[in-house]
Amino acid sequence: MSEVKNRGEILFLYDLKDANPNGDPLDSNKPRIDEETSINIVTDVRLKRTIRDYLFEYKEQEIFVREKADKKGKIQDGKQRGQDFGKKKEEIMENVLEQCIDVRLFGATIPMDKDSVTFTGPVQFSMGRSLHKVELKYMKGTGAFASGEGKKNKTFREEYVLPYSLIGFYGIVNENAAKHTGLKEKDVTLLLDGMWNGTKNLISRSKIGQVPRLLMKINYKEKNYHIGDLLRGIKLVTSLNAEEAIRGIEDYHLDVTEIVGILNKNIDIIESIEFKVDERINFTFKEKTMEFIEIFKKFKMEEIKL
Image (tube, rainbow, N blue to C red; front, top):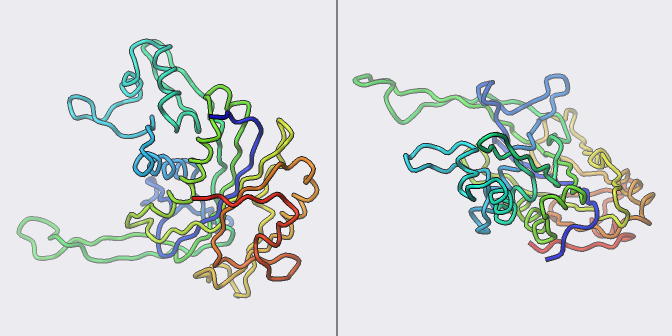
């Protein structure tokens, strides 16, 4: 298996309807929203959890960060989890990196008897943010059970959802940190699989309806180089009077003129662009509606087979 040699940048867009992409447990589990801008926020931890769970449940990959009960039936702490992989420090470190794809990707801190070991993850994501302002909806309903023994009234449930949100994530694959965790190209392929299909298969009550829309990975020839902040090059354009009124992909298009211009300026150091796109999304380039592959035809494009 070949090791990761050069740097890569990742862009990922997905959307959802009438759901909660990432609740805040300290605020009634409401979707996270920037109060100043009305932009929906999703933590990088949420995305990594999605990827981890998919790789473990669907791809039979071992992951370090997961709930596991000890012999007494209680959830392990970090130290106990580390001891699943050996007794001595060096043995634990070697086995964790060899067996756990999430540590090779995202790193981890492993508590030991007297100290801890930290692996810096080669793959890091910024906070996810919606490409438009969102609206928060409060919903209330009745539960299935009585509010107490002998009582006639049922309990009430309440929840907060977003009618719609198109969320964008930006990430980097760092070839330097990859050397320390032994990250392989095969691991990165599984990462992309986990982003796309993990998002699609996160079928819980609060997440059902999530749909991956666009995944891009820009691969560079030059070491220690990336453009940065590429997500800002994709603009959501709507004819509605307010962005908060968006309810689906039919209400907008994505203008990629800016990002194409940025990539064109760096075309000599771009090795290739890997992509996966939902054909239902409308793209525009210089105010013209065009197919995604046609817009990026100057680049060496490789469709991600998932």
